[in-house]
Length: 136
Image (cartoon, rainbow, N blue to C red; front, top):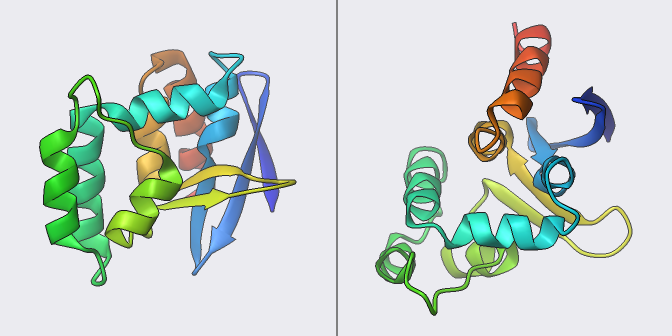
C-alpha cells in the first residue's frame, strides 16, 4: 500500500494482480465530507455504468454481460441505486475493489479512478501528474 499526495490530499494506491488500484474514497474526500455518498452517486449515473461495462468487457474475460445489461437498463432512473460491492457481486467486475473494515474503502483500477477524478478538473490535473511521473 502506497500513498500519493494530490491537491493536499493523501490518496492510497494498492497493487492487485500487478495493477494499481487507486482509492476512490480518498479522491472523494477532496470534494465532499461524505465520500461514500459521492462514490455511490457517481455509480448511479448511466454514463458511469456504461463506462464501467465497456472497461470490464475489454479487460475482464469473466465479466457477466447479461447481468450488466439489466443494470445498464436501470441506470439513471430515480429509483436506481448502485454500490461498489453490488456492482462487483452482480457483474463479476475486476475494475473496482470494495474493502470493508480498517483500511477499507472503494478502490478502482487506475483507468477508472482517472475517470472518477475527472469530475473535478483541478483534481484530475494532480492525478495526471502522478500518472505521468509513475507510468512512463
